Length: 348
Ligand code: GLA
Image (cartoon, rainbow, N blue to C red; front, side, top):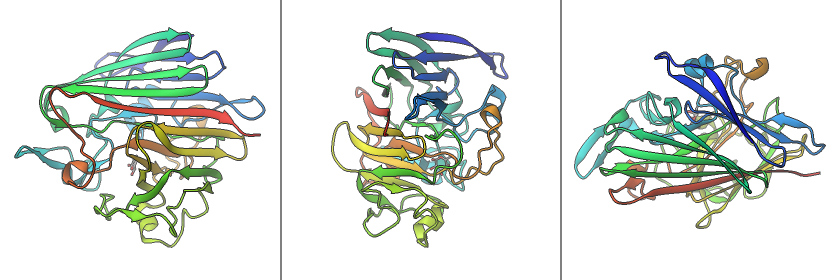
C-alpha cells in the first residue's frame, strides 16, 4: 500500500510530498521527494511492538535548517574530497569546501537538498518508489549532465532494497549513498548495539578525516568488528584514529565481491536486527559523534551524541585524488550501478 500527502513547501513554493509505503509484513516507511529522505521506518521488536528506528524531523523547516543529512540520499559524491579539488583528463575541477577545508556529501545543495521526481509502484513482492533527478552539467562544480535514478523497494520479506543507477554525458565522478541514522531500540543511544562489519581493513584518516591512503589492519584495534562487538566497548579507546574521528567515523574495506555481506547491527534490548548487503567496496560507519542534542527530532526526541548510527555503503572517500583506490570515474556510455539491501528481523 502506498499513500501520499503534503509535507510543506520549499522557499520557492515547490510542494514537498511524503509517500508512505507499507508492505504485507507490517513494515512501514515514509519517504520525501525532498532529498529522497526516509523520515520514518517502522519495524517490530521481538514482541511484535513497532517502533520508528530512524532519526528525523516532524517538519520540513527542520530538514531545511539543521539536518545532519538525516535519512537522505547523498550525491554526487558521498563522503569527502580533499580540499574540494580533483582533476579529470587534465581539467581541474573545484567544488564547495563545506567541511573543515574539504568537500563533503556533494556540496552546498547536494542530492539531499533537491526535489526528486517520484513514481510509486507495487508488485506481488512489495512496494517501491522510483526517484529520478537530472543533475545539470557543473551543478555543484561537477562535470556532466548526470541522470540519476534510485529505487527504494520495501519487499514483503522486510528488506529495503536500494538500487542506484546513473549515466552522464561528460566524464565525471560519482559515489552515491544513503545517510539514514538508525537506532534499532527506537530511543536512547546506540552504544549497546552490537555491530559486525565484514572487513579486515579500514582507512585511517588525517585530522580533517581524509584517508591517508594507507590500508590498516583492524585486528588488535578498536576497529575490529569482524565478530560482533558492542559499539560502546571501544568507542572511547585511547587510539589516535578514535581521537581523530571523535569515535567511529571511518570507511571499512569490505571483503568479497558482488552483492556481499557488509554489516549486521543488533540491539540486545529490543531484539531488532539489521543486516546490510552491498555491491560497494566500502562502508562508512559513523557513530553519530557530531550529534549534540541541539537537534530536536520527531516527537520531541533529543538527538544527543551517539543516538544514531550510519552505515553508508560507498566507494572510498577522496577516491578522485587517490589512484590506489577503486575508481569512482563514470565515463560517457557507461552506466553507474550500485545496490544495497537493509534486511530487518528480530532475535529472541
Ligand atoms: C558522514 C561523515 C561524518 C559527518 C556526517 C554528517 O557520515 O563521515 O563525519 O559529517 O556525515 O554529520
